[in-house]
Image 1 (cartoon, rainbow, N blue to C red):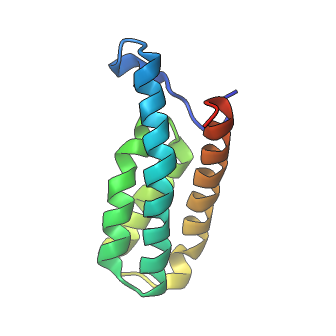
Image 2 (tube, one colour):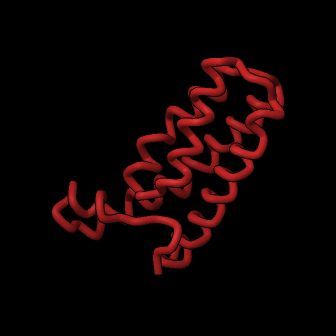
Length: 114
């Protein structure tokens, strides 16, 4: 049962195509954790560009998956990169985003038998 995500937008754009929804879910479980890794590594290296591009890449996916809190975290991260803020200012937001993503991946794998 979906707690951390909402596929209503996915079903709306696909005319309730369950196979399409599953493809989106599989892409999410493969690509979003990889981009989360890029965010963390970029943060470690103070590579604002890497952090921005990874955050920007997953932003539409988080919106499509109905992950509103994670989406807000990504917007905050993007704004932080533009301002080239201090690492300590964004650490908790990155940790929060990672938590949302990890919970969602776990839930999706269970819900879709991946």
